[in-house]
Amino acid sequence: MFDLNKLSLAEARDALRNRDVTSVELTEACLKAIDAADVLNAFVHKTPEIALERAKAADERIKAGDAPAMCGLPIGIKDLFCTKGVPSQAASKILDGFKPEYESTVSQQLADAGAVMLGKLNMDEFAMGSSNETSVYGNAVNPWRRGNDDAQLTPGGSSGGSASAVAADLCLAATGTDTGGSIRQPAAFTGITGIKPTYGRCSRWGIVAFASSLDQAGPMTKNVRDAAIMLEAMCGHDPKDSTSAELAVPNFEAMLTGDIKGKKIGIPKEYRMDGMPAEIEKLWADGAEMLRDAGAEIVDISLPHTKYALPAYYVIAPAEASSNLARYDGVRYGRRAQLAQGDGITEMYEKTRAEGFGHEVQRRVMIGTYVLSAGFYDAYYNRARKVRTLIKKDFEDVFAAGVDAILTPATPSAAFGLGEMTEADPVQMYLNDVFTVTVNLAGLPGISVPAGLDGQGLPLGLQLIGRPWEEGDLLNTAYALENAAGFVAKPGKWW
Image (tube, rainbow, N blue to C red; front, side, top):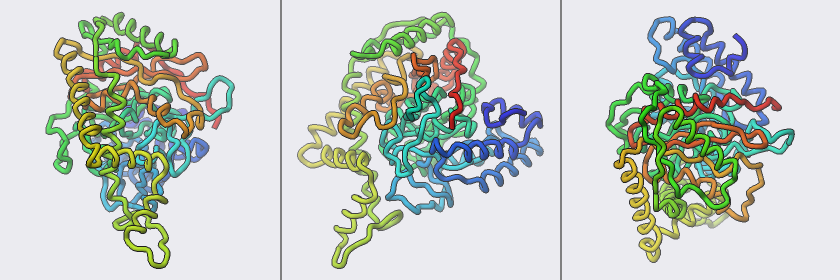
């Protein structure tokens, strides 16, 4: 078989079942591709020994006829997931040297299903960023390029390494996490599929926390069918996570009929932003037309509190980050700064955190600490929580009126160049999340599907937002959109 690393999860699964290929062969093809792609800086901790050991075990399971769908399939794991005995740094200097003695629930479930871990993937530090430029490992690089331009582009963030690795065929799929768009925005920037499930669908246990009421893990894959296959393996109730939902996990793949006749798809007028590029506007209109042609009814809807979503998110997320990151103090694990003679515990905390956290993490921790402080708690944090409730109610009202899914752009632009958005204006960077943060604030499932190319040949994605707990229905609508869009473009290999 030619270029095994280019297979989708579904194709590789079927090839394994038919004994056309072994998991070891698949894994070796991916390991070879990873070693040849160091310039993308997607894999930051390679684990070839673990990968080959798991691949051999998977081949035995397949031979014995006891193999779940993910068995033998090589995947990458975002560095935010704790993996036993393997560095799990959340791309931060402060967790340098941390090798957990336990496995995150999601990565454990994937391992139990027979998936093969190839290594850990690059990301923004503590998942804070939209461009993968805040990582202690350096920038992850998008395998796509603008026309004949050699400028390196961002793969998006925070799951930039995951997006880059899947788009460049270094692995068949990868895990990501999404706090304000960190699965969907990089998926859109790299021409792959990424789904953020309903809050509580995947366990957060063993995933380094950023903002606990917003974080959710999900798969990043080459197509919608793969997303359905991998999501099923990642979901399920976990008694170790108090926010994990005690709900049966359906067979998502079996729900992919592509039939969306009679479904109501909402187009929110508030997402028509001033200055939206004409290409994004056209893609959105084309997407609505494709769904209409597939038999769906397209209706205009209103989500009136959308304009407050970004400000509310950038109060709530840093507040929770400030609280979650207080534990990184140089005492229990990770890095401790060199102390001078006579330094006490306060100096140790200050020096360790100043050295260990990058600028973006420091900025968010300070914002969060400020909005939680005695004089400002009500003015900022409590007010943001009230706005969040209103945003959630907007969606509830729309779904109560019979809308099945909502169609929006995934990002306000195609991938931009690394270094193009400077530190000087962090708000410019935060605006990348304008279409995605509402979904996290409301705890809803959202999926990004590649739907076209811009004038420079870069991929653009459309986002579908679904009803809570109805990922199967959402995936089916995404499947219909994917079939209609017919996106098959791949980046030209330059690395």
